[in-house]
Image 1 (cartoon, rainbow, N blue to C red):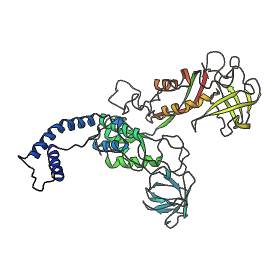
Image 2: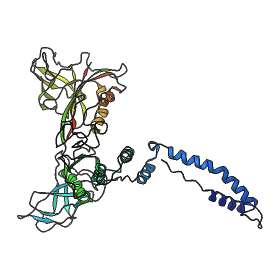
Image 3: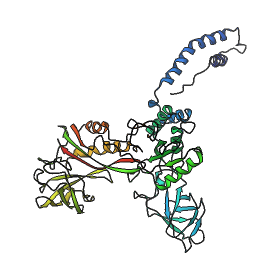
Image 4: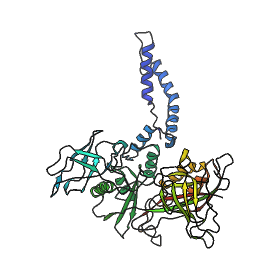
Length: 495
């Protein structure tokens, strides 16, 4: 709600009498009980009180969706919703040390020479040459994120240590990550709605989520709790982070360490609680589409290929990349080695490939073809006829090209960023008693591809009609290492 400040009845009366004395040209004028100015002041207050009351009621009725960003922060504070705010990056640096290693103190300082950004060791100890030391940024914001391989300098290197170290590479290819700005409107609204619906307290699931999201130095996207995951009274927990430059929402080991320390300090000692690592589960999505009459249609009069299942009962299988030696040379095949019903690729055709790491479409224009299946293909790299940066990946689907494919990038990426990790146990008769994820899917952070994926793509202005033919209603596999569906491949075909 918006808090509207109004005067009290006494304030209206006092302000009226003060203004009366300021404006009347009479040094002997008096105000107070029994005087004419007091009578007028009381009458004015009688008229204003209903108006003020209506204004306050109107403010209380304002939907939080209509509040400004500053008002949302104030409202969140009034409801006890803690917003982590801006965060700094964290990760590891690889050190050099003499034989026998060297000891770094917690809080030891490092500097990035060009920006003078400062970092601190988060967990000191004795480390050997080539080992990784956990560090975190003192400042906040995306500017604190550093690429793997960046050289940092020790402000005061201890005995046996090299004067420099390098940022270690995380499993997703990133370096120091997690630096982010303050929450935007949608993130604040989601935090408010969640706390109003699930107030934290007494070490319940909502309070575990609150502790995780409050961890300093980690930009937690969402926290997920698995009560009684290994039987009473165990509590399982995991979390995702906002997707960074490399697209991964899996937390790094440094971020996991910070959250683990936070829970160790706050969770009840009687709660055996366990971190459940999230494992990415690759998913291929295929759709058939009819383009709107006003949209850019298929680049070729006879678009190739059509949709084929990976393992059909008869005929050709899906058309995929067999191998690639460069961005402009590859071998294309079918998944079952049958070429009787799939047609042939030909010079001049325009093909589309989904670049999963960068979540973008790449166009390839065929230059030469050798064979009748499999096909050895080269692409035309002149005059931007083909993308010359992306090398196709073995096993990925081949789509016919349309410039309208680019419209699909934002909605499909947004959908998979809204997906949460799956269940720890297969749903059964113990539902609600053991292991079920909190917040519960699929209404909140679905653990599957829902109808929203198909409807979101079909709602685009460039689409007349669309069918999701592969990858729909897929549920993440239950596992005590919760699985998170990620878009590994995407293909679009004519209806």
